[in-house]
Amino acid sequence: MKLEHCINCVFPNTKPDLSFNDEGLCSACQSAFKKDDGIDWNKRKKEFFEIVEHYKKDGIGYDCLIPVSGGKDSTYQAYFMKEICGMNPLCVCFETTYATKLGNQNLDNITRLGIDLIHFKKNHKVYKTMVIESFKRIGDEMWPNHIGIFTIPVMMAVKMNIPLIIWGENSQMEYGGPDLRSVQSRVLDRKWLEEFGGLLGNRIIDMIGVDGITEKELTPYFYPSDEEINKIGVTGVFLGSYFFWDARKQLEIVKKNGFKVKEDGPLEGTYTNYENLDERLVGLHDYLKYVKYGFGRATDHVCIDIRNKRMTRKEGIEKVLKFDGKYPHFGVKSFIEYSGMKKNEIDKIIDSFTNPILFQQDENGSFKRDKEFNLIPNFKIE
Ligand SMILES: [Zn+2]
Image (tube, rainbow, N blue to C red):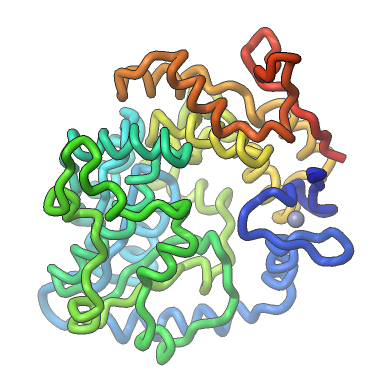
């Protein structure tokens, strides 16, 4: 297999769920071009405000539920639904794996915007067992988090009788244009979670029995039943389907509303200081993606900046070469603290997920590394 990159951005053909046309343009760029030309954003905006009016309650109660983390998008969604839409939102946060101080501060800041927030603190023993198990099994230590951030908000929506859930950007952007009628008849959605939630074929029931975990202890990780969801009419919409999603513009807005960025430099694995700053293990998570597919978080950010015309492709490639796929010393150190595992044990597991076609090995089959412990890629970005 030859690693090839999109002719417009720098996404590689190894990226899951990405396809290329005959010219070598990736599907993410194709839909971004559509977003620039083919979408009537004014019409979308009108549709969104129809949805808002439909779900606004008379009297007491929450008008919508917003799943949040200590990240930028969450603050923006909360601000937007409260200030621009005039709704009374309830924010729900499924506690991240190993939170940073900054992330917790940003979470508290949401309440200072005049919004109620439920912070769901999970059973540490069960969660940690799943973190370690999924790291070993599928090379993703954030796996139980990918589930909890979907199941807990939906569970709360059911329990608190809040039919409308507001998600942020749709990472699997479909510009189908859901209007009020189709929104009402739609549920988000166990299927979406299973297809796009990044569960890598591992299901929650597969964790029953690991270190004695019982089904009952996994309660927070089961999606509510269709019956429960239909009774309330729970539906989820992505803000990004109705409004042009521009992370940098949103950043300026949330900063004016108390959101804090990492002041002492970019986050591990990329060049920005405002994404994923709530989780200490994110550098390890992104690195695992890099060893499997040959691209990391810096590539993700560069691709967005190229598509939003903030960077040329050449500048993007320079950024990728400088920041992507570097061994995550901070992430691994944090994972040692969190899991109690030893560094060589962790490295061995990372190696077991490292693609031997993409990275150079010595004559014994061990991966070659430079003096910063970084892998040596077999591929080039051109
Ligand atoms: Zn592309």
